[in-house]
Amino acid sequence: MKPPKEVLFASEERKSLSEIAAFLRAAADGLERGVLILAQDERRVEVRPQGSIVLEVEYEVQGEKEKLEIEVEWMSGIEPLSIP
Image 1 (cartoon, rainbow, N blue to C red):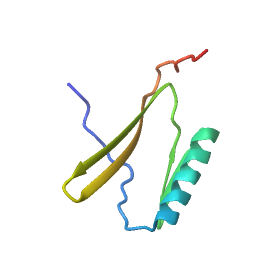
Image 2: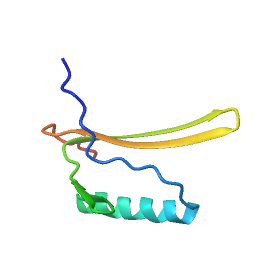
Image 3: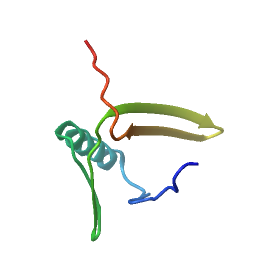
């Protein structure tokens, strides 16, 4: 049986394309350093991806609505993939 899901940080805000691009650049920089800091108001969560990391990108269209999802997922304690 799976352990219950615990949401440590959630945010959904309307932003401009340049604000979203700035967030993605900051997220990329944080991931490259090994720590991503999620902050909103007084909330602050440090995320430290490790082990085997999977990147999932999905683009979908439903009528006039378009959606791009970028998901980074990992399981702690699993060795990273070695890429030659």
